[in-house]
Each structure stands twice: as structure tokens, then as C-alpha cells.
Image (cartoon, rainbow, N blue to C red):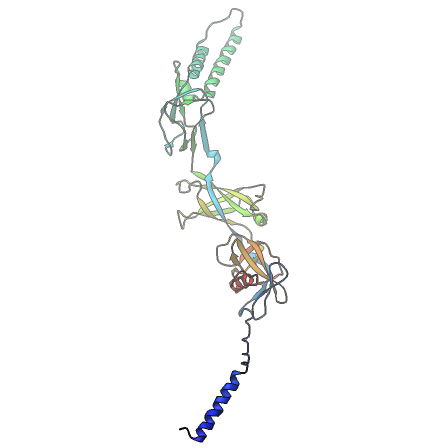
Amino acid sequence: MMNRPAALIFLGLTAAALGACGKDPAPAEPAPAPHDAVASSAPDVFVLPDDAIPGLDWKLVDMAEIPGALETAGLVNYDPRRVATIVSRVQGRIEDVRVGLWDSVAQGDPIVQLYSPDFMTAEAEYLQAGTSTNPSSTTAPGLLDGMDAALVNAAKQKLTLLGMSPQDLTELKTPQPTIWIRAPIGGVILDDKVVRGTAINPGDALFTLGTLDEVWITADVYEEDAARLAVGQSLEARVPAFPGQTFRGVISNISPDINPDTHTLQVRSKVPNADGKLKPRMLASVTIMTRPGKALAVPAGALVFDTDGYYVFVQVGPDRVLRRKVEIVSWGGAGPVRVRAGLKSGERIAVSETVQLNALWHRARGEGN
């Protein structure tokens, strides 16, 4: 049996417990909300508390000195003045072929034999004109000689226009229905459309030849650098196929117009290529030796890439930040980045922690966690 003091203690505890059950619990103190960005009424602007991102730095945009070496991308191509297309000048067929695609030929080499009655007719006219000795009793000898010479020259010119070379013309003795077409230049067969026995017509392309002892390198330069360019400036090119080797030339031409899509102009340089290492359509890294200049540039840390381009964060008021898209000049991933559009000198931008800023911008718009 419980003694009296213990019973009193038990009854007191039970009463206290029953009294507590009839009361609401006291509310807990709320945890302090973290500082975060919130959307603003202006598009692409959000409110950013001062202490939202530790270590966030800001800097005024300014013009920066750019070196005298202008870096850009280029492309190797044929010099079109060193390319020749051989076309048929008669109606007939292909009798014989001595070369094929990528073969090397020397100037004057016979490469394709054509059959055509046009050759036989023109050759007969030429030989007849050269052996014509029928004097007219009413024609003075001097005038006769002049007429004969004119006939011979006309017949000779006709054969030349049909594709006969001076060498074959000199050796012509009797009319033949076939003729060898010779290479007009030395080089490599770039295109071959010839099949033995195929019928041909005037104007049909047979071969394309080109030489690579000298090539063109064209490079794209942004229009804001146009004032730094001049004909005669040195150009250096490097291609992935031959790392460590530099190919040198000078600017020979500058395009007179601007590409409206990229706002670039092209420069062209003739580059010696005696060993044939440079191949048409090769990509090249190009350095043009120009005079130094100034351009709008920002630290690499100021940029963040998101979806479709590069963005910066501009301070547009107390606790107000604007995310803005910018256009940059081609960038190698190191050093300051030149900005073509989207910023102006004197604006204040974030130069660090831009990845976190971008995450906050998305969160303020309800696009992220």
C-alpha cells in the first residue's frame, strides 16, 4: 500500500499532466530565412541583397590595350589563277584517256584523245590552204600571196580554237578524225569527268587541273579591326596537321565589303607551298601583324554561358542586377575577352561568382531550385 506522502506526490504529478493536456503548445521561433534574390518588375532584372553571395566583386567596364598581333581563323584554298578547266570544243566522243583523278601532269602532256569529224574537216581546210597554188590570171601576184596567207591563218586559227596545240599543228601532215588534248598547265587532276567512249558536246567539262606551289589563305576579321589592316602586312598561319610549323605570307587583298551576317571582312594572302603541305580546305590559325589598338574587354570571370550565348550581370541600381547577353570576339579561353556588343564603357559588372549569380537569376524567375 502506498504511504501518504508518496500518494500526495503522485496526485500532484497527475494533475500537472492533465493540466498540460488542455493547453496549446507555445509556437517555436522561426529560423531566419536565407538571403536570396527576388524577381523585379523590369525584364531580366532581379533584386540582389548585398550579402547574398560572399566574395562577389564588381568592376567598371573600360577600354583595354590590345596587342599588335591580331588573332583570327583562316582557310587554305587554291589560287584560282593556278586552276584550269579543260572543256570540249567539238561534238564527238572520248577515244582514249591517259590520266585520272589526283594524277600529276606537266604542261603540254597529252591527257585525253577526242574523236570528231570537225577535226578532220578543219585539218583538211588548213592543209589545202597551205598547198593552194592556183593563180588567177586577173589577180596580181602580191594580192594572191596575201589571200593565201589569210586563208592559211584563218584555217590555223580554226584548229587552235578547236583545241589543237601548236606542237600538233606543226606536225600535221594528213587529216585525222582524232586529236590529243594537252594539259594547259602543270598540276594535279582535281576533277575527272572523263569516261572512254562517252559522247561529248561543246562546253562539256572534261578535267580540272590545279597547282599547289602557291596557295591562298583567307581570314575573317571583325569590322571594328578594319582600320588596323593594310595590304602588305605580314601574316602567319598554323595548321593542325603540322604543329609547330609556321607558314608565312603577306596580305595581298582586303575585301571591299562586310559580311552582313557575321560583320566580318576577309583578308587574303598568297603563301608559298613548294612542298605541298598546305591542302585546300584546311583550317588555319592566323596571326596578322598589325599596329596596337584599344577595345572593350572584360575579365573572363565576368562571363557565363547559358543556353544560347554569353551573359554578363550589370548593376543597374541599388540591389538591382540586370542579366544581359553580349557578343564576344573569338576567344582562346585565356586572358581578357573582347566584347563586340552588349556593353559600354563605364557600366559596372560582376567579375566573379557569375555562375552563382546566374543560378539566382533563374531561381528568382521560378526556373530553378
